[in-house]
Image 1 (cartoon, helix red, strand yellow):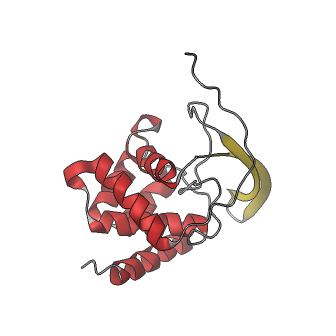
Image 2 (cartoon, rainbow, N blue to C red):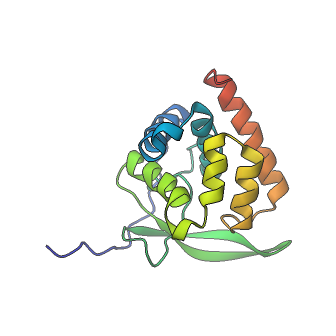
Length: 173
């Protein structure tokens, strides 16, 4: 049959606990990275997605990484009005299209695929740092590739703090 056309869906709050996020990210990372996966990588992915989604309380449509919809993305999307920093210190309210998923695992898997293989490998270096459990390098590389527009210093500090918290919580050395 013909491929399903992507369509706009309503933004729906799909809150997940941090434990559920950890479980879905672990599944996605172990499927994608095979032997290169580690508990540190899962803790770092959780730290990053927890920052992006308010620890899972502000997640919409199971979009773990707050990923915007590109022309290449074949799936559904939702619109949200958000503040983006367009120049240092200059923020603008913008209507943006975000990727929508039907399940938590679909969202977690696409987040990992987005970092590892999508976008012609644009985030491949960041993904390497994710697998190594190196939060500072991971976030620095994300910023270099314009994954986020926020100031990198506070963003790095937040991810590092969350990473340490999750490593402690889940007994990761």
